[in-house]
Amino acid sequence: MNFNLVYKSWIPVVSLRFQLEEISLLEIFESWNTIKEIQGDNPPTSLALYHFLLAILHRAYQGPKDIDHWEQIEQDDGKKASAYLKSHTDCFDLQHPERPFMQDATIAQDAAAEIYQAHVLHGNNTSTVFCHDHQWSGASISIPEAARLVLRLHWFDVGGRKTGSSISAGVIPTMDAANVLVQGKTLKETLLLNLMQYNPQKEIPSVINGDDLPAWEREPSAAVERIPNGYIDYLTYQWRRVRLFFEGDRAVNVAFHNGDRIPKGVEASQWECGVAYRQTKQGLFKVRLNLSRSLWRDSAAFLQSSDLGKRPRIIGWIADLQEEELAEERLSFQVLGLSVDNAKPLGWSRENFSAPMLYLKEKRLWEALVIAIRTAEEHQNVFRSFKGSPYYALAEILKYGDAGALANALDGESRYWVTLDQAFPELLFALPDDCETMADGVTRYGNRQLPIWTKTVQSAATNAFTESIASIRNYEARAAALRALSYHLAKLRGDIKPKSKKKPSSKTKKAAMAS
Image 1 (tube, helix red, strand yellow):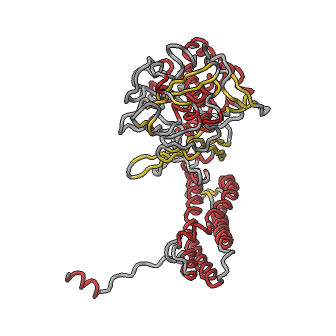
Image 2: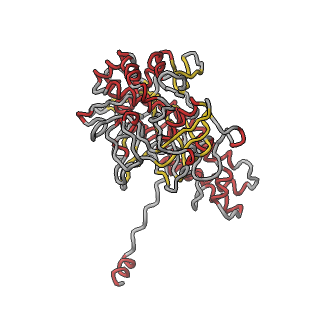
Image 3: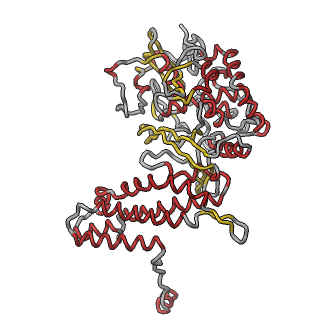
């Protein structure tokens, strides 16, 4: 038996006519101009497939070394990628008796579990999470599904103990991260826009230590602690050891153990190009995926690098391409990933974002955006339950002991963010046109739009809070809460200056000195 991924249909794609079909690896590079996008079984699987295809392109073209080389790759239209696949056909056989694709042939079936346990994203607990398949609904999956599962397990799998193993599996860097995928109009555009500059001689995007080969060209080995040889090695790093077992044309069992791991103290950020990082006193930390937080609230982290953090390196490369008019004036990307709590998957996400490319080039425009987002974040404090806050004033008169519980129950904050979710895109695209060159020759942004945005934010806060307490029949409590709201909004506008701390009196100073 064999199932060669080069020629068999297994990658789910959406055509430009919005038809869903499965095609082979070879067909991907022969028809990528007529394909809109890849659509995996879930967002993590889609992103794993994109990573896999990018690794093939980097390996086949050994680049792009620079912008000129990127243009050559674009003009080649996938021919060298197709030639690479044909010359390495044996590497892509999912059921190869000795070297099954991205699997460890030494793992025995008695160390495997029923395949649904991996297919539905289990952790080390016994419950299924957002599961559509259960043990009693069939304990097998199709071979194309199994091929996609192998890739997903390598790059999007929770920690915890795995099948037949007493050792806890390590954390994969792409987990719980807001992974950026730049979008084009076709699959070809999307893949080329995400094809990061790759120039080993200049150590871009990372240092090369030995032969930078994809996993399917490396000699099989036991799981070890090791530093990736380079960017291609990182893209295909085997974070798990996986083995599929089949009955006829169905995969029935899977073993997935702890795999290779990067040594402690070595940061994956030196290879990772699709994740934004925040700078803290403790170091760089990835921008995490947050299922309850709209993407625009973190948008500044994706568009510019500063002392506060570093944008995804692929975004910087896109800015270079756009300078040469090789990318559109509007940046569009998806943020995909899987949110986890230790070894428990919480949910996957895919969210679209679009912004003018000018944000990537003009630091002062980006700074105006940061001010706008900070304004929105500051105003969420009116929905908290600290002493003197609107909800605290409400709880005090109602004799409601727990102001925090009351605030959570009335939940004005959700209404607030829903309103701003709808208003923010208008600001995002209006800010670049709101520019003025000052006497010192510096261009400033937001002189008109930022005050308008502040009014929008204050109105959203007022309406959301007022609606949240509409059911309260104690008019004294409502009036006290609204007075507190007005006070805090005035402080945020700057109409009321915060009280300065009183200077200690001379008597206090003398007493302190005497003690």
